Length: 554
Image 1 (cartoon, rainbow, N blue to C red):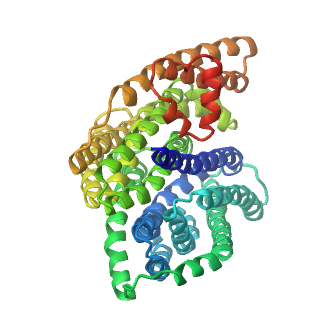
Image 2 (tube, helix red, strand yellow):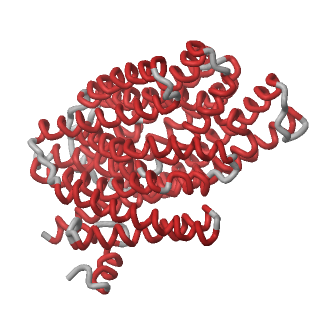
Image 3 (cartoon, rainbow, N blue to C red):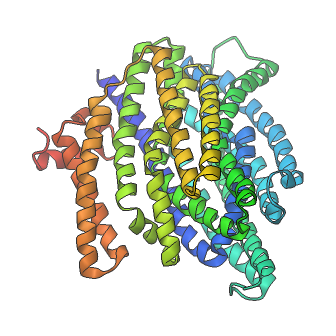
């Protein structure tokens, strides 16, 4: 029993480490968005987001799914201590991404005009080399994740985002200064476009430099561990050695469903971009500069903030993949069900209050992270964020369940579910945009609908695949009820401090602190989390100690 508890604690701990890194990375990403917005403006963010959405799709198809796929197949070999075969998979995966990454980078560079408007082509071409570098980085991250160690990936993510932030703002500043001779925003439309595109190119350059920095770190970590890896391979007494041809075939068969699932799952953003930025303005005869500014606020600010809480689900997914794959390989279905149940509950305990916080404190949070917004921009971005709040929960659960299905071997199921959700979302977005006056709210509604359908279909598929039934009261109802108390308390504190200080920035900080305390207290009082589960969280022993000292827990 002690070993099982330790295993569970380590599983949540590793997810917590990766989640903390993901959240820190996204916060860094948000913090640099404010000075970046000051430099390149909403129009620059609009061009950046347009190019970034298509760069993401090509990245997903070529390299993004590599860490999860590689961690799964290597974890299966490590489970039976086939260290030589595990390392051969690692080497073959490097060859795979070098070939696929090269093709994808060249395709994106020379085919940029197929995806984006003429003005955004230089931005998309700047992203192209990053795909090649990311593939190598992904293999290294997947290799260490297969060993159930998330620290290397976590540190590399933080370093990547720091480099991205510094270079994005610095390069945008220098390139605009060089091209325009001044940082002042021009009044002529052609100059506005030139300035915005130049700034967006600088920001895209930061993305590439960030990936290069992360790759150099991971290569250094691998070099430090190389002797230990070689010693373990030499001690491997398994006589069966997989051929490189068989491994390449296996990697292709495993990676392809991961790619399709991830690509379709993330195609939603690109479809929405195309509908709103290309089709909608022509249909309604709206100025594309206005559309671009609005899209910059929606995708560059509101969606960016709403994606922060999903970082934990992504981290939990990365921790889940090798764990579930090893349990399934060992035919331990009971252990797999227990692991899945714990992962879902932990994800909901954290994502539900985040969604409530985003809903209640949308305006001050947006102002805190993007202080350069005008009052009109702030109000618009905050309303968009409120409209996206429910999608936080849906995306968190659907992301986790997609990975669970892949770990269970049901690799095609998330593809089917994502395709169904994408079709319904697209029809909804088109209908609302063309036949109502909801404008960008149409995209927010369609986005939430997409994540909700994905969430429901994936949850149902996991239940069928492994005869698994999630406990509902402590997983969903109690966290929601505790979040309601939290939201009410946070709103009251915010409004009270705002009346006294007349500063949203000052008022939101104590509101966030009170929100955390209220949720923690209510969750424990309503028995939403057990002592053992709480100990599994990062700093869990300290949380248990505090709870007992406050007599919240016996």
